Image (cartoon, rainbow, N blue to C red; front, side):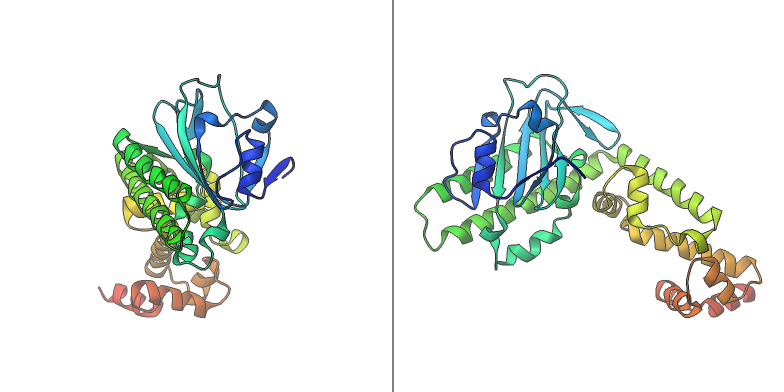
Amino acid sequence: MTNIQRIKTITEFHRARGLTPPEHPLISVVNYADVHLTATQLNKNWVFDFYLIALKRNMGGKIKYGQQAYDFDEGILFFIAPGQVFSLTREGEESPERSGWMLLVHPDFIWNTALSKTIKNFEFFGYTIHEALFVSKKEEQLLGRIIQDIRQEYQANIDKYSQHIIISQIETLLIYSERFYNRQFLTRKKAGHQLLEKMEELLNRYFNEGDFIKNGLPTVTHLAEQLQVSPKYLSSLLKVLTGLNAQQHIHEKLIEKAKERLSTTGLSVSEIAYELGFEHPQSFSKFFKLKTHVSPLAFRRSFQGS
C-alpha cells in the first residue's frame, strides 16, 4: 500500500495535529474539538505505533457501518491498534459543534503488565473503522468519566501507584466497550441477521460447487472479504447471535456435507475425504470424530442400521 504516513510517538501525533506537547510521553487524552486535519492528511493512509481509542460526535460527515451509513449525530467509538493501516475520510464540512476525546496509549506504558497480554483479547482492535461502536448518551457519559479519571491521574503528581491506577482504568474502559459492542450486536439484530443470511448463502454456494480439491476449504478471511467486514468483527457478531464463531460455522457446514455424502452415496471414506478437500483420509476421520464423537464408518453404519 502506497502513501502511508507513520506516526511513531504520542509527541509526534500532537505535533502533527497542531496540539500542545503531551503532559506524559506514553499516554495522552486529547479533546477531539482541538484536533484539526488538513486536506492532505485526509487523503493519506496512516499507521500509528500506539493504541488509539476515540469517541467522536457531530463530526459533520458520515461513516459507513457495514452496508449502512450513519450521521455523526450520535457518539461513535472506534479502536486502532499499533500497526493497523487506516485512512481518514469525511463527507461534508467540519462541524463547529464536533466533540469527543481521544485516548492515546503507547505499548511501552503497559509493557510487562497483565494488560499487555489481555489487550489482545479485545477483538474490536481488529475491527475496521466502518465497524465502529455506536454508544448511547448514557454509555458515552460513563466512558467520559473514566477518561476524565485517566486524565486527572496522569496530570497529578506521578508516583508508584499512578501507572497501576491508570492501567486499571484503561482495562475498565475496554471491558465496558466489549459489553456495549455485545449490546450493539443484539440491538441491531436486523443488520446482523442479514449478514448471517449472506454468509449462509456464500457457504451453501461454496459447498454446493464442491470443487474443494481446487479451492480448498473456505477461510474466515475469504468469507469476511466477500461480506465486506473484518474477520474478527464477523466472528464476534456471529458468536453473539448464534453462539458459534465464523470458523465454527465453516466446520458445521463441512460436517453437514460429510454426513450427507456418507449417508446418500457409496463413496468410500477416503473418496469423501479427498472430495471435501482433505489431503489425508486420516485427517478427515479425526476431524469428523472430533466434531461428532463417532467415526465416519460408525456414522454410516448407524445411519444404514436405522
